[in-house]
Length: 152
Image (cartoon, rainbow, N blue to C red; front, side, top):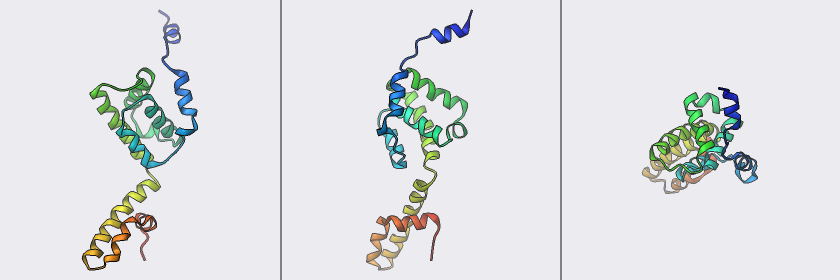
């Protein structure tokens, strides 16, 4: 049996839809906060293609995910419009969360770490009687400095 003939003649579900989604300008944002927000909604082909594209562009797709995980995401992109299975959803959320955490390495992770430190410092200062220190937890520059380890 000619396997190449079978592969080439097998129906491929949606190449145009995938290319249109990847090429659309609305999906080109690289906001790290939106990565985890996308995982909270239903897992669709658009979400999977968007995260895969970001992972490939940042060169994290191959080093972050195992061969089995990449294959599962690729097959889901190819054959499923919207994931309905609970077990598949559970597995994909674990895989995509792993990829999203790798994509957030940078300013998003620094700000997250800095905001946690800013809240702790603010609570401590308010406990000591400095009522103006409550606003520290909302200042982005302060959280950025704490996240980078800048003290002084």
